[in-house]
Amino acid sequence: MEKKELLYEGKAKKVFTTEDPDVLIVSYKDDATAFDGQKKGTIVGKGAINNRMTNHVFRLLEKEGVPTHLVEELNDRETAVKKVEIVPLEVIIRNFSAGSFAKKMGMEEGILLKCPTLEFSYKNDDLHDPFINSYYALALDLATQEEIDVISKYAFKVNEVMRDYFAGLGIELIDFKIEFGRFHGEIILADEVSPDTCRLWDKETHEKLDKDRFRRDLGNVEDAYQEVFKRLGIQ
Ligand code: ADP
Ligand code: UDP
Image 1 (tube, rainbow, N blue to C red):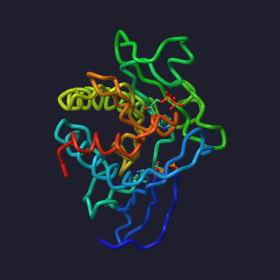
Image 2 (image 1 turned 120 degrees about the vertical axis):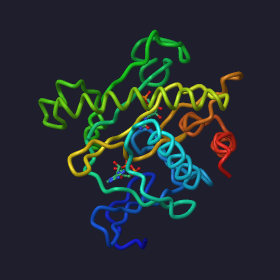
Image 3 (image 1 turned 90 degrees about the vertical axis):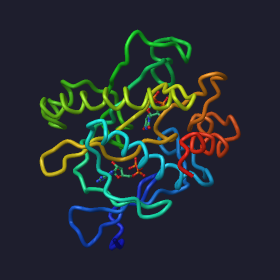
Image 4 (image 1 turned 30 degrees about the horizontal axis):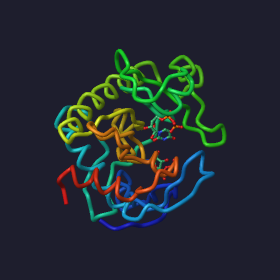
């Protein structure tokens, strides 16, 4: 499978067309951004880790009945994926308080929530991805009720599968963001699942093994990504 034209360059990935109109190639970069792109940097080796971790987790999710965009891992950094129409919602699941939730709710980080919770942001850079609810999503025609129901069902399933899987690696899944797309009328999981998009804490020490090390200048950023990758056991 060959890359044809650059379709889109985002903050973390480049997306290329291929000879097959249903298939794209995503190429993961080492570039890192935070705070709406205001903070920029490089995390050496991140592209390969995020690519391989996403594919590993997506294979697991497929087995558990969550359809994904994965077609084929081409090399360390590049993967062929089904070309979807992205539903412009960032779907966030939280098991523990952290980040914007902890701030908004006046809580410390790391408090176990009574049950997992789901929230949506409208994926719109100009508006800085504002928090919305499902009624906004319907009113703005971002998705249908049926799509929102399927997305919510899959998102909680993704959480169950990933929470158990990471627990087995000594990692607490604090929260994460996923994106879905439409492929020939079906909702499937797209984009990525990586330390860029998940909060992952060591279960024993509560050490942060994710992008918060970059966001908050905690140091050892590369080491944290490498540690997660090592625990996946896919070297
Ligand atoms: P951003 O756009 O936020 O800077 P990235 O650098 O990760 O993010 O760019 C990847 C883009 O590709 C995102 O906008 C994402 O929604 C989109 N995308 C992910 N998977 C697919 C797919 N299977 N088909 C089409 N677009 C996708
Ligand atoms: N997240 C993401 N992309 C975003 C916003 C959030 O991947 O544009 C992830 C983030 O890494 C965390 C979860 O979603 O795992 C919840 O993030 P939160 O709302 O707490 O936002 P933040 O504190 O990162 O601003």
